[in-house]
Length: 209
Image 1: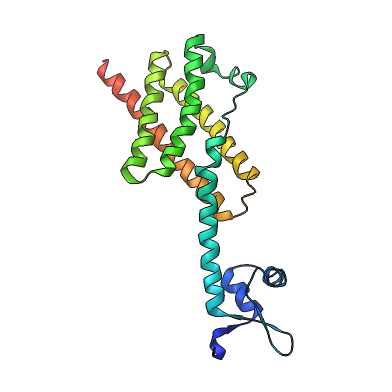
Image 2: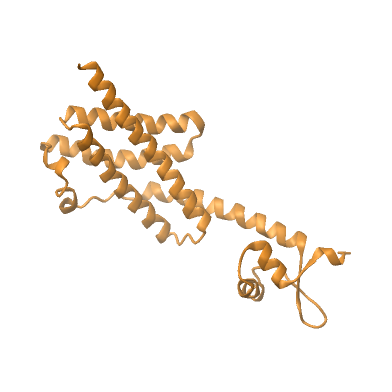
């Protein structure tokens, strides 16, 4: 039999979950939150049930985010409008063969992100560094300086971010944690690529002096 200390009021649960009391009331009425009624009709909650429910919600939201990233992204089309890319100064310096290589690099960035998110530790970092080296090497072959190469990568990074946002919106992901995790992962991935790109250009310049 639960003791008095095991029972929580509606306001207690709101404080525990970090939501407004009206949200707890709504969840209770919808049957989303385990709730008990006193003889007088007041809502009461068992601490153990609320804690278990909260843990399950965190697990579900992380699972939701993982499913979105690992599955929905595989079906994402990396869309680049011709009008948009034709406004990029670095792009106008390229011949048609080089332009096609850069368009392909956008899709490689998407697939690289999927590999990064499904791998761990050193393997995940190596995935990003490999792409950074690839962007630098392609930029050098196409005659772009380090500034142009950086702008080229940032262009594709922004398209990638827009693709991620579209996937999350279409999947109706409502978890703030899922969104923040997504932003952290994409930023970490693309930051590593950019750093590697810059470092690779520096190595090329040192070797050519």
